[in-house]
Length: 338
Image 1 (cartoon, helix red, strand yellow):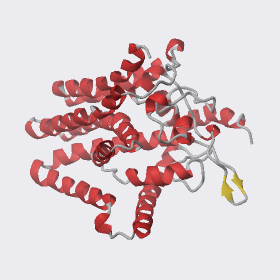
Image 2 (cartoon, rainbow, N blue to C red):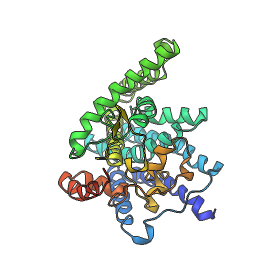
Image 3 (cartoon, rainbow, N blue to C red):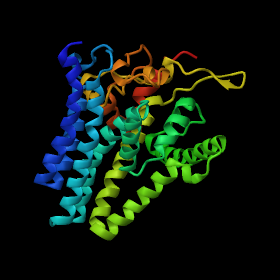
Image 4 (cartoon, rainbow, N blue to C red):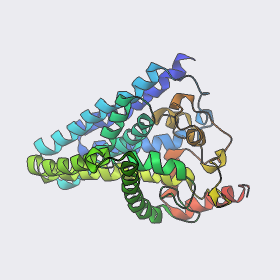
């Protein structure tokens, strides 16, 4: 594997570093920098020379390091945000702007890397995944995604799979409520199977810690700190669920003899834009990820499944305008077999 092919994943570090540096200048600069990065990635996805990522390669310690380093980078970025809103003369509007800038990092990368770390077999990686998800008040993802979404993706039973004709804005309340409820049902089911009480539930402890942290923020650092934390969490979760919307939109597994057909490459949308894949750990090779959930991100392949009109960065903007999204996606759905 060429050095540049391996080192391209270090591009991910630019996002927290650039947003953090901009935050020192101004909360508004942090927001503007994050928005600028999103627009640049979306534009880069339209450049022909940047529309394909290098082939899959063996996972190395370097690839694991790229993921793990994000945890301290994100912790430093969040600490920087809290320091700025508590020690400077920051208005509520500026705290919101800073939260959006930081939330762009914690959502597009923090949650994405938590997702990848959570699929690993290392206890350290799974701990980091729980910590990253708790930092955006969404720890129940650690139950719902692995035990719920993966078995049920592209079915009507999955709250994280968007239905044909369903807009992003109608999908969001359904998936937020459905994923929360599903996570607690799945946790209760597992505890019964293992004959354990709720005091052994990591989900319960993580949720309690999330709530305690919010109370501590309000009491110790004040309302602006709580506002900043709430905004970054909310925007991070929005990005997560918007990507969930894009990943399986309108794709449905058939029911055969009362059971869902096995998940196939045709049940997830894919893209292979180079810069976006480098920034979010090959997440756009989504069919292969679902077919081989334990496969490390460096080893994911670009399968010939359904293809999005552009990469995830561009699709975020497209999905936010439902008529435009439907006009682009309906012809693609019509071409799907069955």
